[in-house]
Image (tube, rainbow, N blue to C red; front, side, top):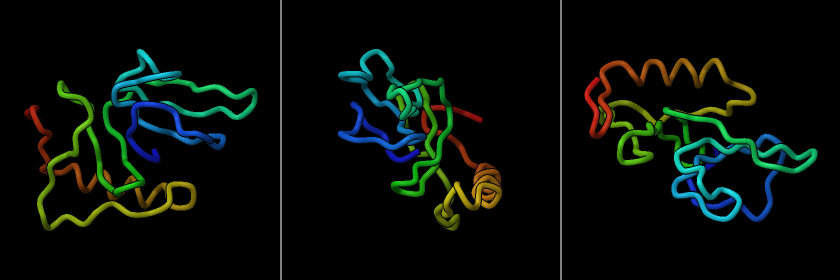
Length: 109
């Protein structure tokens, strides 16, 4: 996903994904969901989401009782990197490694 925001970007490309914080405009009522842009015919498709990787900051987010929050992680863990279009396996491997021993804000796991 590209970012967490309240309303759709001015222009989007097919397949662009955003996490909806407090939805406005076309995203009203879609708080906490994943928005995916479908270029043809031009609409937003929404999905429930609990965990997502934000390409804007390289951090893993979880959707908890207080909305989207960064997953707490040990300081020694590097930020997750990689382009999901060319290195999906590498990104998923990093995500799974990062989940070991992590706890979520306001949640116990």
